[in-house]
Structures are given as structure tokens and as C-alpha cells.
Amino acid sequence: MKFFVSVALFFLFLNCFATAQTLIQDSCKTAASKDPTLKYDFCVQSLEQDPQSKTATTLEGLVLASITYAESKTTNVNS
Image 1 (cartoon, rainbow, N blue to C red):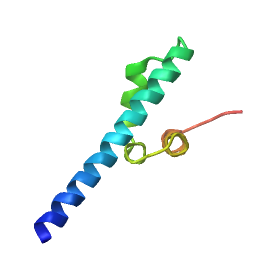
Image 2 (tube, one colour):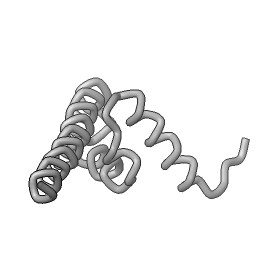
Image 3 (cartoon, rainbow, N blue to C red):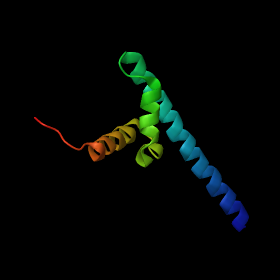
Image 4 (cartoon, rainbow, N blue to C red):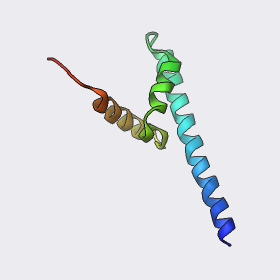
């Protein structure tokens, strides 16, 4: 019985990871097609570096994760 629960949990987590990867790729593809200065590869690599982005299941979650990640990497902003 434990084996089947373990297998079910494995596929559940695998599905969540695949969903996040697809969300990142689709979002970057859309953004890159609308902004000629944004490179698809840069977008995907940037979002994949953030652990929160990898677990996002909605576009809103991905946006929040990317904002949080950008804030954490910001060192100095002059106004």
C-alpha cells in the first residue's frame, strides 16, 4: 500500500513540475513575441533560477514569484 501511495505522490509532484515548466515557457514565448527587446531564452533561464517560479501554477503566481525574485536581487536603486 505504501508503494502505491509513494508512486501516486511521485506522479503528482512530477505533474506539478511539468505544469510550472509549461507555464514558464508559454509565458516567456508570449512576452518575447510582444517585446522585441526581450529574449525568450533569457526569460526562461531567469524564471527557472527562482524556486518559487518553478512551483507556480498560475500566471499570477508566476508574476508574484518573479517580482519577489527581482526585489531580492536588487541592490541599489536611485530615484
